[in-house]
Length: 114
Length: 108
Image 1 (cartoon, rainbow over the protein chains, first blue to last red):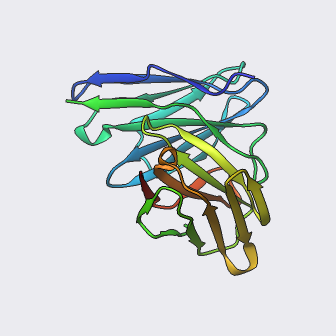
Image 2: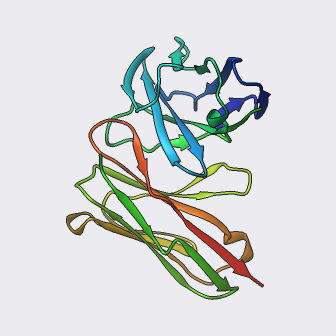
């Protein structure tokens, strides 16, 4: 079974631009979560989608948004990019979500904001 | 939110040595996972272990949920074990809270 895939793997943007990242979960998994990793803040939860609905959200500004499609693929968007948005963005999928499900991560998208 | 602390923050070992990494958490959890982050940033699943003990080759893990800690054991370490090890816990909602990691360096 194929793992979680993320595209693109690397991205360079300038301040003020917007960016869209994509995540395809493991086949059959319905929950997709997004995390941001920075050297200063570590790994932080952004949001979770399940059956095309945002089910849970972390403490990030409204510039960070996402969506999930009927095939469970998910996208996250960051508008009006800031230098501090430079980070590794990781997506994780789990079968159904909820407290009993193991999460599996994709390879990440490394975003650099200049 | 829940606090997750890992120790030690850094660990340097000679190849062949054994090590124990610790993860403490501040509240009851429904799930605990251990990950190894490779040099390219991907998180590799090691264990899904909300309680009890599991073993996978040279690695094993024990979670004592009632005392709010988990241990990851690495035996006969190899240079390929180098990297950052994270524990992450899950409470009611489906989001993982990560520790700050243990950076392991195994020297030949």
